[in-house]
Length: 435
Image (cartoon, rainbow, N blue to C red; front, top):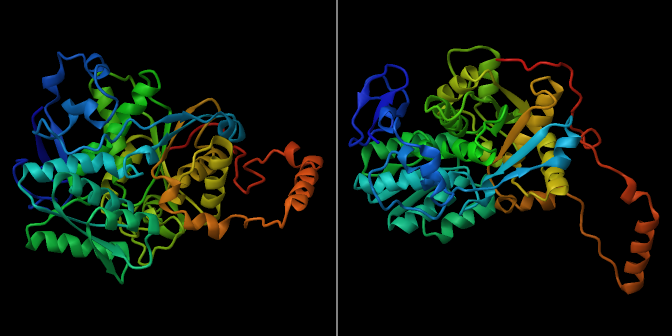
């Protein structure tokens, strides 16, 4: 399908043969726009059903020219019906879209398969990014697959070791920066404007196009329906806007008759978008020194803030904040009730669901999809720091005594509820509010 780049603000259009990331005229973000009329006579669902369930199942809606994309078989992640979790959260019909099932363990792979494919199409030899961890891991893997050189900048001491190890083992040139992510991103944007380095942070519009395939998958997995609400952790803010674009396209193409409300979730210590939305500001209210235990969303100046705010406003959604304590409790709750181990940033969507329910943003009976953006093994250190310590017993007699005491206690009759875990779940309102 034919595609081109268009500025989200001044609407200037540019050829996809040019390597640009922002509008040369006004400096704002770019979006990829398509000629959807080319698909009018195609039965997309029938066509898709004949292909493998992954990102490239939807190739008609992806902005690439190559018939051989750079792929690690990303996408096709599970949509897990979470009945026990839903019962604890006001009897909601809850699904968790587990993006930790992607090749490098996070949703970034959806974007990198498209972004790195475009890098090769445009003749680039070296790719670069700034990262809080997952982006560097994903870009390093896809660059390795494509035979490209890779440079990543990460904040020193601020990236989970699991993610750092991935970037290193895939052969990336890893540079530790003694500043935060926002500084690192400014550096790589400057470098890519001077040298032949292909930038693959989410300011690159092609990367976001791959991430919107999550919406198509959810639509298929729900039996060709869209959910009432989609809850997404928000860091650099590209994912929520990409997913929203995907759902809008499903309606535009006549595949769905409605769109969901998009709810973004930020940590209290790194919540520039929530503050900007709350104060109805025309400019981003940056957080100079963002801090949260959820390292993947520890970003104070999200580059895609305009796209994200438009997504929540257009969808009648909002952006809410949760505490680090709520995030960690939600992480344990999801693992202990549904067997899904996700990293803290992913658990923000579960904590956000509990908070949204208490604020009347989600009603009983609604179908809710929480996006879990990365696998728990990305950041295993946090479990050892925040969970109960190991129990060490000396011999079989001591173990026997412990087991008998446990069986005779009321332990197995207790039901851990979100309220007991410190998550608010009592609905105060009966109708969803809009931003």
